[in-house]
Image (cartoon, rainbow, N blue to C red; front, side, top):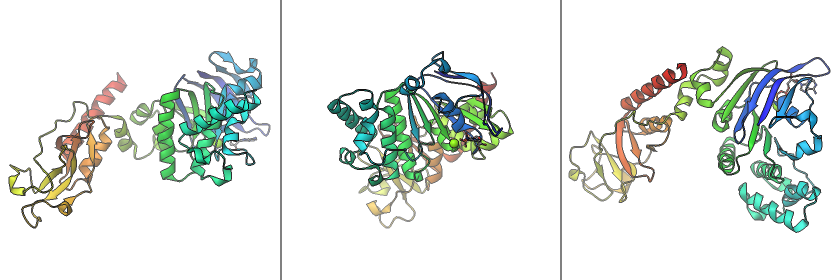
Length: 371
Ligand code: ADP
Ligand code: MG
């Protein structure tokens, strides 16, 4: 647990970077500090490992004031990942990861094999181990940065804009991998980002800071979206708030599915009893949805592969309402296709039914929030 007690930082030139910050980062969770540029995110984070000293207030690690701890010992317990990875340019990838364990007295063979294991864990192929950082892509370098921060197996991990320097597709991959990794290692993490989408995706807790380094709101992503504390938070969380909130609700029992008549490729359309309308759902032999066929524009009776409209998505029953809405909106029939966790068809619902379920989820949620 990392606790800020009334922490402020005033730089020598009089800039108030952080002002009276009270916040707790719980053990085993990801706490994300987010806010506009210059609101004190990096300053707050660097006060945790004492790269910057607070002007007033205290920061505790598991209840112990960091001022009472030796700085070197403190930093050994806190892994640190920065933007652009900050790797040693003249050392190979594996030596970058093994450097600190070596410095702490680990044997050459053992630290190397531990480093190779870590590289595999962060999704980097062994063939990159002997390369130099400049021979890797930005995303690969970032993976090495994470592996290096984990090399001494510290309970705490600080990450400053770790995924900001890579393109959106790679960033998404890195975020997904990072969430899988964290599910495994359960570190106590404080991450800084200016990207609210990243904060909502990765944070168990999201801490919104405002200009002048004051706390605007600390909450779970779902609560932040459902009940922003003031206009600043609402504005920062953004105009797509309603849509983003859908990412956190599942349909549970709010959506009643109806049976959908289906057909397989190679079968005759006349064999389909009572289709809902001109669109008939095509499934494979395992009853997994493939796409839709337009019975009005079909050339013959038999459905050929080329007749199937593949543009629609389907959603698993356990997935958030956002995915169900995507399915309905992407489907030429306007119907959302819902499967079980194995991907087999459960049924469909109209776009109107999906939106009604979303409204009911929202009502249930705001009743819960105000309670
Ligand atoms: P963020 O990471 O949210 O962009 P920072 O913590 O880097 O914000 O900076 C917070 C404020 O403190 C900004 O106004 C910044 O210009 C100022 N600042 C940062 N470092 C220093 C410094 N060494 N001396 C003076 N002002 C600084
Ligand atoms: Mg910063």
